[in-house]
Length: 461
Image (cartoon, rainbow, N blue to C red; front, side):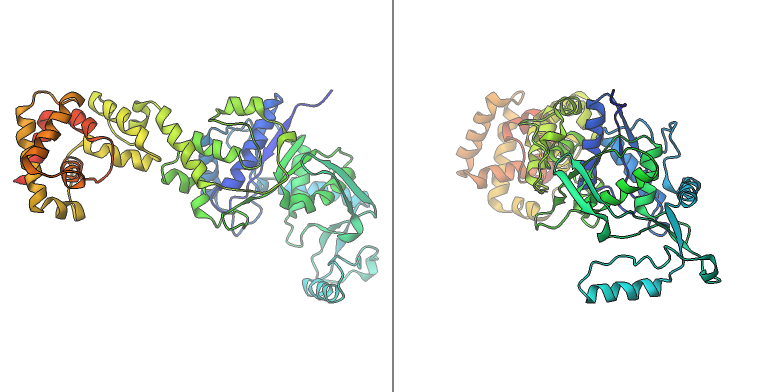
């Protein structure tokens, strides 16, 4: 019987959460939920210099905002914790100690200067850099005084073969990388060792991650075997690229979840755009439950994918159009009241982002500020004539609606002789302080007769 599926997302809190990392989190989340298992959040914060709690908090806030909630983690607790690597130092030390006792690891006293010189010689000779095993058989009498050793894993000479969920069967020769450090001379666990100790003790059954980790996998499999454990199932997915073909990373602030939130993109749209990075769940917007039902590692692509901002915008436009007006007003920080609810319903289909929505609904939420090029345009004699005629026509009208809009505009046209932009731009500019937006007929109806007259008169005065 297959054990309970347990996946993990293990970010380093050294920067903002970005699109590529969310893709990894999303696929691990979907796999766990599809198989009735658990999704674990683990913080890999052993980089003491670059790791910051503010980044950790930001990562968790962004994941929650996206709807990717974990079953176990730093704030959620769980039986397999702690869930920060910085709190697991004793676990790594004990695990390395057992490997030493069993002859599966040894202490290495080589200085960094010697290791750097060895690497230079190997590269010069055209050989792959690897430790030469100098301390592998070091006797106690040859141990140098005053040197704090690192701990190296004793790599057996063998071929490591595993079945990858995307790439199929992969095979590596251990002689290409040699004995590697698992605990540094600073007593900090090396990445590959800490990851394996964590995955083993947390019972991780399946790992979905970027294919930049493929080269780490044979080392990790050897460590699992040395601990007498079965390795998890590995699935390596091609990296997400930017539009220039470079791997998307933390340096791309515009592709961070924080950046996308600030630009006005909604969680559902972001998840739908990210889900299409190396996976094709079909057309149309999907909720997390629908994605879960459709997810399969067998349908993940071997080819790299580029983050498509236009696709994100399309999903966001759809997301805005289907979101309740009251919810949009709350997101925009505006009161949920009848007049604004009508305006929200009218303007949301013209918006691509929440920034657009806030701009489009501003004329209906309070007084309008007219400045810059729009003010200059409205000061032109032809524009003032249009506004004079509009005021007269609206004053004679009853309630404003789409029915009498055409009569009002026709009256202004006859009175001024203007048409096209010279007719419509002054009307839109005076009523909204903008040059684009929803149809003028809808603007007049939403503002109502009194507000239309007040705005025109205020400007003309």
